[in-house]
Length: 519
Image (cartoon, rainbow, N blue to C red; front, top):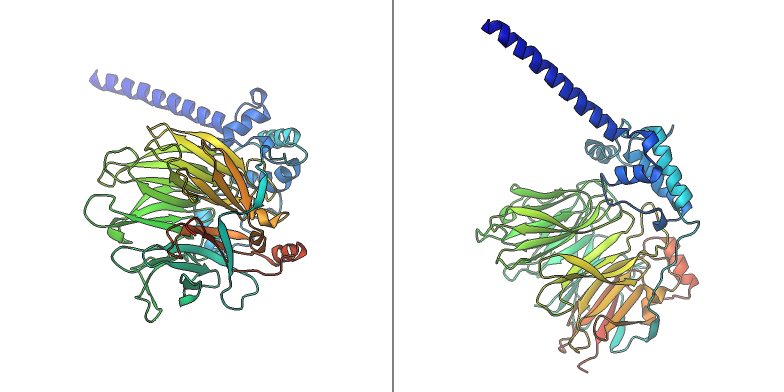
């Protein structure tokens, strides 16, 4: 009798599991292949796009850009390929294997061809014929006032390839990285005092209070998933040599790093942004030990971090910008032991091209606000975009951020906030790298704050002589005010030709804007 009951229970349990499993399978299939009769192209786009990133409205790009650039790649990411399509074309075998391991381009379709065609039709029918124009563009005023511009030439380079400028306030030296695997130190007379040959283009450097500077080398400037980045330590400058730091030599296209004691053990930890291309991650290393890695985010596009106590509990938190396909600004709240809780501050559609951010208190309420640029215009949609520009997000005091101001600026690559004129409010220096040089002098924009976030824009004629990839600020001439340093990177002969056509005759690596407030 007991055996019969047990047998009956087993049968009932089997059918229950079978029915549940069948139901789960059906639900999975329904999610994967929604009922076509109930789904429009817009609904399908929102379903599938939102699985990876914020939904991109068709109005963000014109029809031709959707058709030729974005939609084919979107299809690949959903396993939809036409005969002869090869997402790995141009990649070396080891790089292709890395991308394949992440299943960026799945072999099996994640959507039916019918549903995919609905999405394509929705974008091509709804998108504008031409890119929408920017609205509310600030007019550029007279020649930049309050600054004196000086060009800096290093060597006999025809085409500048400056990939880093970073000022050391302790020594008043400006460190300049060149994509030809070179690093320079420049003094207040704008003369080279030291130089180093490095393994790959230098993109970041820090200046510890105790110890020598450390230099982060990207590996490949061009998009890549190869693990060729490295971290070096400079010597005391006497022999201009460099030393590998532990085993930090297989980083996936790293672009920035920071240091802080994240777990309260009295040792400084390293946070490294590995941008990658299709793959990447944001990690911190306990005590700076490469064998003690803690991954905060496995995601391509780790662009920048700022370490700061954001909730007033005395523990260092991390604010991070993630670029590439899944563009977002994240807050990692620290429990003091190196355990983090992630909070999304802001998300953006994948074509926004977020490029930089920093914390700044614009309303003087004691809570850090966010200054952010979006204008990365490479890859699949290199057109002028009406939503490119400079954004200010205000903090409500509880780390909830709301966009307060948007200043249109094609190809915006970086913006820095500082009270340059000493009137008590924050001004902004901004650069554009990704814009086609119709008005090359407007690749730099100085925004003077007239109060209550009301800005006027100006530039300098010498800004026309470069494509400004990077920027930093500091008092290089030790006169008590803050100067601005721009680094030029001309990517191709096509860009050089366009500048020559515009009448540009000199191509400096660096443009120094000396602040004359205290003169």
